[in-house]
Length: 185
Image (cartoon, rainbow, N blue to C red):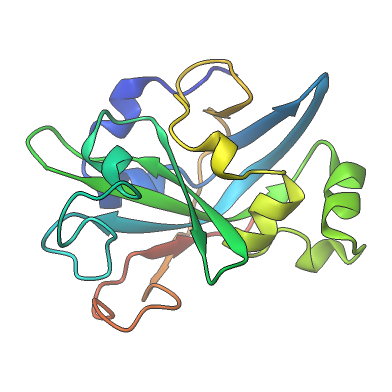
């Protein structure tokens, strides 16, 4: 498997969100690898998407969304959780990112269980905050080039079929957009 190239992310944000399904998220911690197949994503576009962090203006928090595609956007929310996004937008668009909501764990499951302090596999990484906690993704992984073999990247994987599209979760604006995508392995 190969690391996804920058051009993969240089397309419509919604299309990238769909096509990230089935890809492999890799987190390296020392010599250990934690991996999982991406099974749920959400697209967040720029100024015309009121649910996007970049809908109003560029800030210190969201500035990576306005930059080059293929970089990580990790933010802290509700005063206790981190969420992982990858910058994705087609040429000419000001900003955009895809939230990685859920994975099917592959390697490093025991470490993920220890990090989450629980052993129910079905509840281990089935949400963006659970995923980042299990894979030890924090602000230290903000603005990492995910197209390089570093401590966090995304590799090719399987082709997702029978993709389910529904409204994004946990938002109060932009709820008409069916930009939450998932599939079952």
